[in-house]
Length: 370
Length: 175
Image (cartoon, rainbow over all chains, first blue to last red):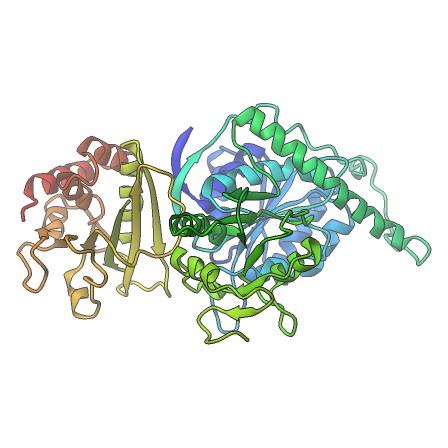
């Protein structure tokens, strides 16, 4: 059905279609609309699910973990400080190989107190073993959330998936949304190591030095396999519903001399900048990085690369710029822009391309290269 | 692309007006996005919302710096906010006012949305509802069609008085 919706409402609509058995959540700006809408679906009988309004985000993830070990499909949503508050349990969900799906509405961390978009919250969870996808439109928020359940629950993966959308600039923007009848796209969740609630037993998760590393390797093996599973699921989604996704969304890259790499809404806005630059005769393209974990192979060799990081690792640099440097073997022009919702327009992005200095880093709004 | 900036005060429905307008444009078969700019939300504080309407999918997420149309739902804001900032040459201003206001440029239109809402007794928590009548004025201006404006209102609000208020605004809008 074709309508309009905010990014938050799109996520909630996808969760309704996915029919999780348990949703546990704690509200936080700018995510609250997701869990409010899901609570309303449950109250109105549109979603048959156990909705657990917990007292904190740590408990939200703990409740999802407790539910997920029984083999039931689970969902939660959070943002920023909420995500960091559940950090211990975020590790646990991946280590216990539970296909929890979580929407994270990307928001900066305080202090200074700030509720606007930034990716540092998600990147602070990058080594937890969660798959992470970043979306750029309301439609994609819906589609990626649906696909997240199928990818997480695939027996070759069995790892949790985080769907990231920019706070306010996507969570609260209203765009067209085409909801689908998912049919049998999402088969019932089957967890091979689910506990048997009819036969309760105690488990000790103690794993000694002789075995622990094997479990870690198994997470990495699944993370590597996940690339193929993601491609399969995105392929099936396209076949059934006609919308195509990949590890990146490439725009006018084929003959580009310079490629802008960005994530989320800035990655979409970059396409407008590319059109302007092309009009000036600059052969530019953009690559919106969708999957952050597993990190995709990117073909960027032989051209200038401008990376926009809406994040920062203090004492090191832009997280995406350094990921590109190590994984794609190029030395990008690293632009730190959009922190805490800093206004960045397509004109600014076009300027980043015009003024690029490969190998250097600059902070948008701060004078000179640093 | 047609770009609209809506000025209002927190609680007056400017954000909902943007969503309604985007929905009406969408029902006209166009692409539309509504982006509220959220500050520290407080009732009564000046807020802005943005609407973009185009024949092609809209990829811009940043704020509107050079609007084609500025809508002012509360003209008392004009004492503290430069509502004309960045208005395109030949752009239009729509004021919620029973009378023309001096100082706006020649393309300023006005309609008494507050009076229309009060006449229909469209009041929530002591505030007249402005976001449904304004859609009628925008239909008169040709930003959206009247049938799509009415459809959008009905999709978001059950109370038929909202549609009536939009029709009254459609009739009353004058330059």
